[in-house]
Length: 453
Image (cartoon, rainbow, N blue to C red):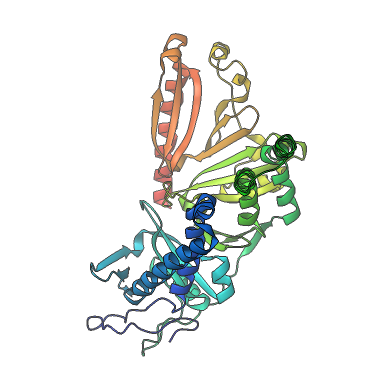
């Protein structure tokens, strides 16, 4: 039996294959606890007021019991094992389904530990593959040692990590692998993280919301339970984004390990994500308006192989630096894009006639060609710079809208495999075509240089 894990499944695999493994036996309990939160949120305050607390508790108990039973059935019929260069996940009772994930398409395996998993010593394994529509085959839940060892083994099979110790002959599972060593690039102070989220529009608008609530209460004399609950829910929604960012980025650490970055972050849900540098498509630099007082910026990544369609953006490894000063930002950018200086990026604004389309922001947008990256600037109050390595450009497009045609302007798009890419907006038409040709040439040359290495 693997450390902290669960032994082989009772059903036998074909001869010569590794025995299938089950998830940890506490997995149904954790799924049932998650269902409790979802059920209570789904029933809402209005249901409580209509049926009363007693029937509300009965409804919650029935839903949670049913979800737990389904979780137990799902756990009993779920298994996984590695066959050659594939991870196979078997699930289903009435309709059996087997998912085979080619490990050569594997980009990263993430170890995620939600709060309940931390309390029970468990972890969730999430796989990201090239071209995946969403996170593939999340294995929830495994023991921490088992999850770490399986992660190392999958990355080794995919050719992205040293091979861990072999599987014991008795099918007892994969031994725990030691945590890989890395070079610390930066650790964000939690104090800076808290201050950065106080310097947001939500935090500044909160006193106005409180004043409105107090004024409404004084004008009406008294409030019903539903009114109070609805108001508190609305205020919680205003604070949700900055609070979630603090919880997600708590104890943020960035390490370099060879040709990969390792990101550690999270308070209630800890995450360890691995980002291969050769999969980085763009680096985005953002200077929020209120942060500029302290000289702070934020860095984001766009990584190929991670689904842009994930409903929860926390599943995407786009965090490079939640908050930091200019020096830290320049150092991290130079680590991800060697030779690129954040304080010496080229860029020219659109022609003067573009002020008819951008009367306020013409001077804030621009584009330029660095020796290694395409640079695109945008934003008036919140300034942004997008850096696209030439080797990551998949296609170049020139587009014109009706107003642009009358002003002889055009926009040049540099598309990447990861999604958004970057755009040089409202360029002179002749300059736009020249820029597109130059980007195409540099992209082709950079890709050929990459293949020859």
